[in-house]
Length: 276
Image (cartoon, rainbow, N blue to C red; front, side, top):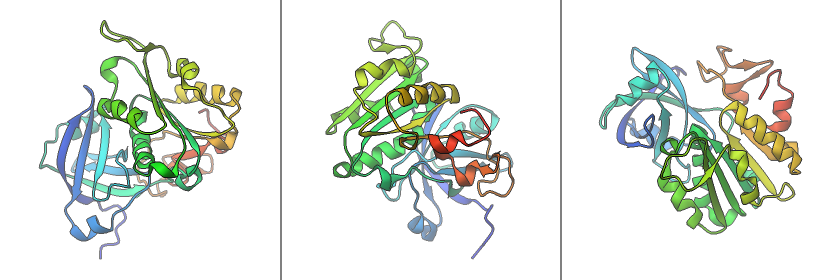
């Protein structure tokens, strides 16, 4: 048995779905049957994805752990390495290792009403948790999903955004910053959806993922709405190199994002020496 924690597993790309012009969802299958059988993860965790002779990049898992045998990574083309990943085709092999990081506190969410607020590619890790919740629908309360995108063409997971509100006690609201001539939905930042969301901080937990500036404004509004600091759960973005707490690249004070996060409550985030 190889104990090298930096050695990736080979995975074959089984399917590629183009979500937007710069986001693709890759469905992967591990080549090692024993590893494939033993592999498990929790919503909110991430994988280190490698292109051989090019480097590694941390990518959130976007599939639900309630669907064993499926590993999906939704990747935004944002640089040379993610650009190389986007150049892969079905049947190609890539390296993946993980899962890493602290997940969303699934057990704490059981029986609660849930508010999901996402911006852009931030919907990817929330997609993992949303589908998990809907896969186990009877264990959770009302589900409200708010998503903000730059333009209608930048909205990922369009099929699921249409499917989710068909589930029991589920609502989905989407807004864009810059509408096109065909857009008939809301316009403005995701916080403009509060009046339509009908949520209360007295009986709901909020899970947020998106750009830091979006998270800041969402958190401020949630606190005004009566959400406690422990009931606001978010993720922090940091450049993670090793994924296992060895290199220190993702440190925030005494915390390492790859080990102590990337999921934090707002109470925990307040103690960190950084802005949201």
